[in-house]
Length: 257
Ligand SMILES: [Zn+2]
Image (cartoon, rainbow, N blue to C red):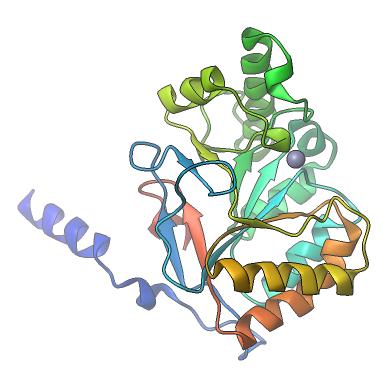
């Protein structure tokens, strides 16, 4: 019994740098610096654009997040770019897109990304009765869980959620906190819902990241301009000395790495 305890303790304190693996086929890869366990008890809401505080990140550490997918014309290109750079990201899934594009969602899972939830069909949840909003959240989680893990359940494997349009309410924030689900806002975004060229988007997001210096980055894997600028974006993050942090649920660090 004591022996098992000692082994488990030692494993839990493996230095994070030791987790980094060489990136196959790309010695210059940006890579993933470390995994960060995010627990609703310690940080129920993160992202300074919406909330008072964000993740405990060091200077020049970024968490990359992608919303609204999976989408067949763009998400595979995003996954290719991330894989080439050995970057682990977080996708906030729409249940209806997961149901329609199962293979892409399963590829995200197989490639080690964290999969959070973003409702079933992207309504603005504060604009409907509370019970209906809760049902929409759970319909999304259930669709995602069934597609990814084969179980119809509204208790999420990865308890991360992002509100469509960042439109929340105190009641819904309390509901998610009571369930131990972390609400992700963001610290910086690319405004990639607006039409612009990939080059314009690249310069806009880099200038905003340089201004905040660290934090959660919001992109949309459903946007062609984002998919197209991503390879250059990741190379430029490396050149500017940024490092990528992969957010994972408590106790999952060694499983996901
Ligand atoms: Zn969205």
